[in-house]
Image 1 (cartoon, rainbow, N blue to C red):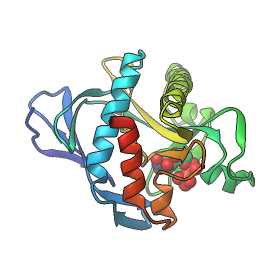
Image 2 (cartoon, rainbow, N blue to C red):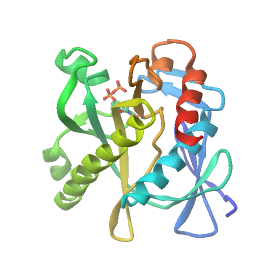
Image 3 (cartoon, rainbow, N blue to C red):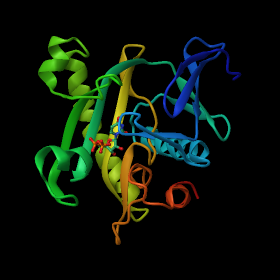
Length: 234
Ligand code: UDP
């Protein structure tokens, strides 16, 4: 499927129209950003690795009965996806305390959470993706109550499946972000699943293998993405 005009360019990906109004090409860039776009840089071949890792994880989730926008992998940097009406909510699942949870609540990084925590954030670059709850979603009409129930149920199911998937590869799934959209009357998983939007720690050493290495200038960013890629895709 040939890509046509650019529909949207984000920080790490570009979406192109195709000749089929129901399908888009999702192109993965090497650009990396953090702290609401204040830190910018490049992770060499990140686009290639994230495209293949996302494809592999979407295929795994589809095989387990999760509906996603993934159609097929086209080449190293492009994935064919279904066109979604994106719900402007980031669904974050947490298994271990890290990142904004620690900052917000004074919790020590690395605490194993007794149960997964699910959080909602409003997708808005100018506002820096503020945390929201179901009342905000309802009053401001970002999703219906029924859709919110799907976001929560699918979020928990995907967390269970992905925790198992990564554990089998010697990786701890600390936390991650999901985005969903509407497609032909259904709510399905969109965006990407990669070390850009997941915290992944080595199961035994707790070494960080995700975008935190870029965020905090920890070095070996490409090497750690490559390690995750090898564990997932080879
Ligand atoms: N995350 C993301 N995009 C965002 C915000 C968060 O992919 O705009 C991911 C992030 O990589 C982490 C999880 O969601 O795996 C939880 O992020 P957190 O709320 O701790 O925020 P951060 O530390 O990224 O500011």
